[in-house]
Image (cartoon, rainbow, N blue to C red):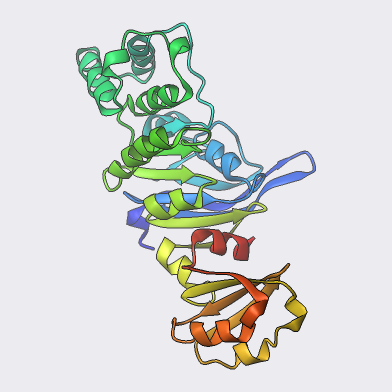
Length: 304
């Protein structure tokens, strides 16, 4: 990757908490203007990595540069470049929405002759103009997330980091926030940590799979899904798996792999042409048959 196109460079990063190694020689380059998703199981190191990028935590070893600035020497500059929305944004509940944004705008040094316009612009952007003078403690979780996003953007940062931005939200609010994040692509460098594979698939230019403090795989959602055996997965539930002659399935031209989970066969296929022949093998033993395309869930399970 061209170094001129790298906004965040993580080099040999390690961090431990006592005997627990959260990050283990982590290496990752994030391009300018891309939306990078980071997915992984609980305890994979996602939030630790983010908090180090944001200069909230210090690593045990390794380096992170943001726009060429080092987390060890240029923390004030880096913090001015980043807008961060944690999973649980710490909003001062007695503040009104507008007053909260003004407070953080002043902290970040937004010019006084611009701050009111910037606040109005952001409230409109996140759909909160009509609640601008209401107190934070009257807001639902979804509305707090919207104000949290506005707070993260108040100083017009070059990099936006979202940590589980739709966790626990209703579908309509999740859709609104996802659409907002999608609209940032290209204009900002965006890092999205999420447990939702469909969210990463929908939004991200690239996805990094993190587990046990290391990147296990990285690529576009399309390229990662292409690594899963087959273009189609046929799922067949049967009464008695031991009675199925799987050799009659594996010899078919379109079949890549056959596995058994409990009483369900998972058959990876290049094409649909042999599906009817496969179903004939199962005969009356089959009581449920369906197909699906490979998803990031399949990639995630395969990687971790």
